[in-house]
Length: 412
Image (cartoon, rainbow, N blue to C red):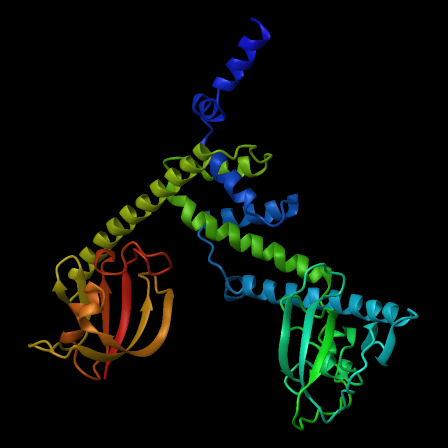
């Protein structure tokens, strides 16, 4: 076989054809997809993820703190970044003010360097309306976060560091102002506690008296110190919860793979495959899992409703689809198109899916179970509705999607 024949041979065998001939197990594809979506793939985080998978398989429920851990982790991660950035800001401002061409306005908080001198009118505290060209970026960045030409500014409406840093500029002057986060956006910016570098050209001082307030004392807002160890512990818990939630979905794929297979492949190196057939196969797997979950949820609802129908205090509104526990129902349904009710939604195991709230329901736009039940409920009479998934939120993502709903209702 000559070189040309070999070249043609390898060109004709596409990655997709290789993929087709050597079918990769579904468990490996799922594990690979999970790992590629992780922020951190260190062994300790993979182990935490696996612990969450095993906990869900064993039927262990998440605590209220575990359910909130992701939001807490994001909050603490931002606080940790804010601490780190603030230390760097203090160091950066001290370094800047040690340079010969940088003039200090407020020690370690506000400074400027003159790029081009002006020869026009002087900006005083009483002349706070100006026309400027400006660009503002984080210290050390190459690209500005914001910029404008010929922009009219009221200096009482901008961050304090910019207004104070422009005082004493002359028309025509270009100045770069270095602003500590305490005189800028503090933690309210996309990146918290960063030094801003504002380059401003004062084009014109506009007529009218607008007084720039004095700076006064700069407040410090100290927050509790967040340690790396604390952040790591939160992230480990977050990975445990992630594993629990992943298996809550993936467990319906038991005809395709086992928990043990997924765990085994999670410990392997990720696949080096990126072509379209990989993603098509992953989508097929999730499609099968989704429909298996719906099928089993509907079957479980059928069994649950059979037991309901034999209970003496349960009234049937639609056999196999809609039941109600209440002392009395209206003989003639209400004809109102809008009905006001206080409702709390749970699943069949009593887990709250939506907290109690009062709402006005448009009957014709409601799910089938509410459409067929609310008009029969009596005002101020407690009721519990049992709605089959087929009459609830079909094909909807989220905890209430394709789920048997138990709704506590009080009509007004």
